Image (cartoon, rainbow, N blue to C red):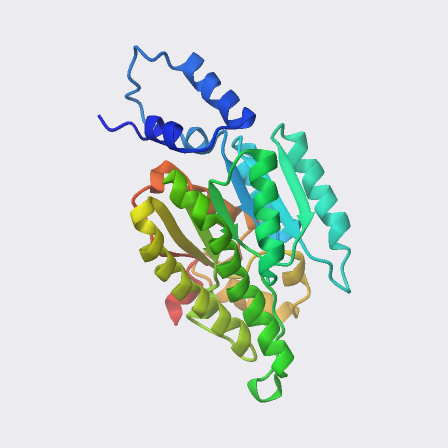
Length: 296
């Protein structure tokens, strides 16, 4: 019987964190007794390492915590923003992850900067023992009618949401190919399929991210690396609270389930895509919008 855990163990870089998890598994499951029961999701990710970009707040924070609760070491990055104390929020998230008993690394890193991304990923590998999962969550929005969008507003959104994801994928691709194992999940948006008014730059960036997802799946698939995307609808984060109340009410009304998502609703789908339960899923976009796009 094909034993993926054995194959993974022989190909991935060793680390004290990963070694301890393996030893715990050996104690729990003697080698003389083949494991026939299906593994729970937590067991298929425990002891590994995830990078969650933009992991200090919102959906990124929820995703980082979901992984940590399942025994995954977590690395998050953040950038300074003029109207938000992101560094303080990053510290709170780091503290919450550490309280769950897993290793964590948190640092400032602008995903638009290729050199910064390379340095960040290298440090993660050195401190946490490798990179097994990448969640490209970092993203920005600068809304405005198409005829009023400044070149700067267009470029910053594309640079962050698309080029930033590309930089991160490229930074982990070498080690994932070498270990012949990896899971990458890109956070797109339902607005890639159903754009609203005044988000030409954002919708274009998320549509491009889906194209990048499928292309990366083709390039990395032969190395046993899965690349997928999630496309959330509206999610209850700090950014959503800044939208006019009528926008939120309309989203709830148009959703088949009559609600908008909690961050954990999307985070759990991301964790699933990084588990061995999704080992044969790649190049796909999972829409997590409560049925919002069904009426389009």
